[in-house]
Image 1 (cartoon, rainbow, N blue to C red):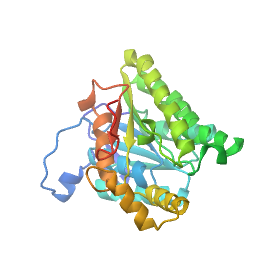
Image 2 (cartoon, helix red, strand yellow):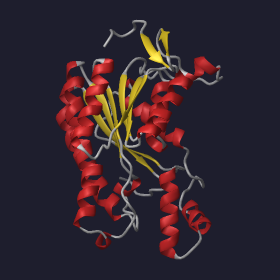
Image 3 (cartoon, helix red, strand yellow):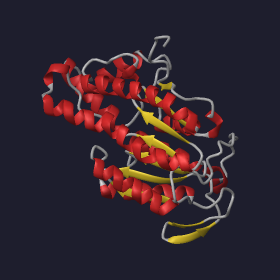
Image 4 (cartoon, rainbow, N blue to C red):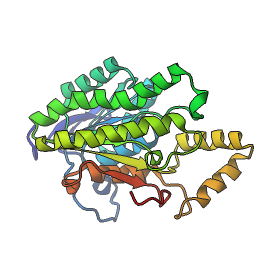
Length: 297
């Protein structure tokens, strides 16, 4: 990886682009102020990034000048996401088609990232969610699949990136979980159980990695307007025997801010927690939920 502050030359959008990445502000002239999060030229791996929350995190990091390696199962979708990110930000984006529930796919994603950028500074560990349903509705295979998708994938990805972060003098890891880790939701048994385990894992790793200047936290989305939320609204409406709109209005009534969150709101929160601006935060669970969870802890 080139030294910090050097002018880099990346292959972006089919051509060679000299200089460091352009932020969305400098490229499009947005008249907004922002703090410098210190992410310029940092190397970030972002999982589940073809759409939804993963894409929003990748977009926020690239907008701050990071170079990103994005992965998702759907090869065509992840390539399209990379093209869009590169076009918007003029930052280097590497797309990798990978099923992140598989150890070999995670290994290949990591190897491709290191080959392209020389190492890893940041990781947003994220995958798609498991199916909705009650605890006893799932067989052993479904539980095993959820374990490999949600929990073991985090163990495997962190295991790969930590040596690189250690060699580079530190790093930051963020794991996408769910508000269900604070308050289990009905009809989301697999998510409730597995994501609670992920939270315990992250808290354990925070103590183990802090002496090496590697921070790790979790980010808890509430009801953010993604395809996943549409699926959950439809599943819950069907279970309750009501229309999807009725289910949506019921859900909105539980959110003090009275609306679903936007993916970019989640993405910007992730960029902050991964940045040097959050350098004294580790082992924390940050909610991005519009006040949905009422508990103190």
